[in-house]
Every structure is written in C-alpha cells, then in structure tokens.
Length: 247
Image 1 (spheres, one colour):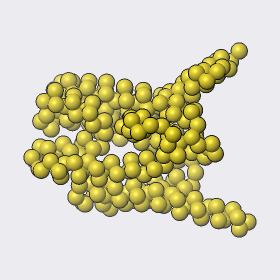
Image 2 (image 1 turned 90 degrees about the vertical axis):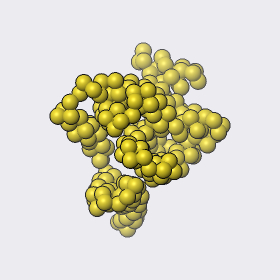
Image 3 (image 1 turned 120 degrees about the horizontal axis):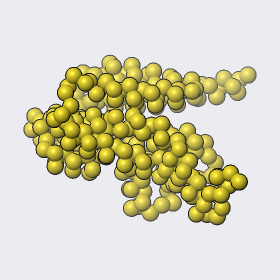
Image 4 (image 1 turned 30 degrees about the vertical axis):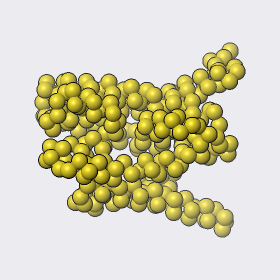
C-alpha cells in the first residue's frame, strides 16, 4: 500500500499527509535558507552587536533582509523610528503576500493568523501559491497543514544556521565571500520557478527596477521592485488571457 494511502486515512491522516507534502517541497529550498541565515548571522556580529543581542535579533525579527537593512543604521546610531521605518519598507512585500493568503486562512483566529504571518517567508509563499493558488475551495484545512510543512523546517534551519554564523563569525575570514554563495543559493531556488511568461516578465521588471533604484534611501528601490514586479506579472497574465479569448 502506498505511503500516501496510509497517511491519508482520517482527518488527522490527511493533515499529516499535507504536512509531509509541504516538507518535501520545502527541502530543496533549505540549502538557500541555511546559507542566507549563516551569512546574516555573520553580518550581525561583524556590524558590532554582541553575540547575545545578535541571537535575540535573529529569534525575534526572523527577517534577513530587514536585519541586513537595519545593521548599518544601528551602527550609525540613527533614531529608532528610522530603523523601524527602513525595516517596514524592505518587508512591505509581506503586505501583498498577506492579502493573497487571506482567503486561505481567514477562518483562523487572530492569534493563529498572526502566528502564520510571523513564520511566513518568500519561499513559503511561492511554494504554497504554486500548489494551491488556483484552488477553488477556500478555506480548506489542507492549506494550513501544507503551509506549516513548508514554514516550520524553514524557521528551524534559518535560526540554527544564523546562530551558528553568530558564534562562528570570528573564525570565518571575509575572503570566503559567503555573501556571493548566498546569492547563488537563492538563485538556484528562484530560476526553476520561472516556468511561465508572466513569472519571467515579473522577475525581469523587478530586477530592472531594483537595479535602477539602488541609490534610493531606505532601500526604497527594493520596495519599488516588488510592486513593479507584481504589477508586471498581473498585466502579463491579463494580456495572455485576452489573447487566448481572441483566438
């Protein structure tokens, strides 16, 4: 008997099956997650924070891009409100992610939805929408358990690798260029996801806007890239549908 048939018996079995499916889909992305966490942990300590403060930052913030954005601001002793504003600008994409995920998790209580939001990641959102983005039944218990299967191992790997980077930072020379390794690891996850024209157009526009907006303060170029990329993907998909109807 197939393992899926055994796991899928009863409600608890179906939930377990969805969790395992999410875990299976998340495994390829864990290398990129771990590498990025390691680099972030090293960067936090190199910026001047103590190991204790760096560990607390990793556990409480759980947002690599926001952490890396805040580090130079913390080092320059800028006002606290400006540090929070910069972090919010960098993570503004999660407002869009949250709006897209709301139909799937609207049945949950506020505390549970806040928990799902805290542990959400870019990769988790992409993998979830890739499997259930077109689902007609919303909400569905399968959605939560599949999403948990993606985000739970991601959170564990991120924090283990980030804390490892924090305590190994002094022993790792800058010549290793781990930042470049992290970028390569992330690209290895993103490139296979480019399977349709709207996705390709979305990435192309976002990359161009991000490059052009490098000089903007508070990393506003990144926020602009997210908005422009999503808009480009929506427009491209709409044009594709109109062409199919015209044929």
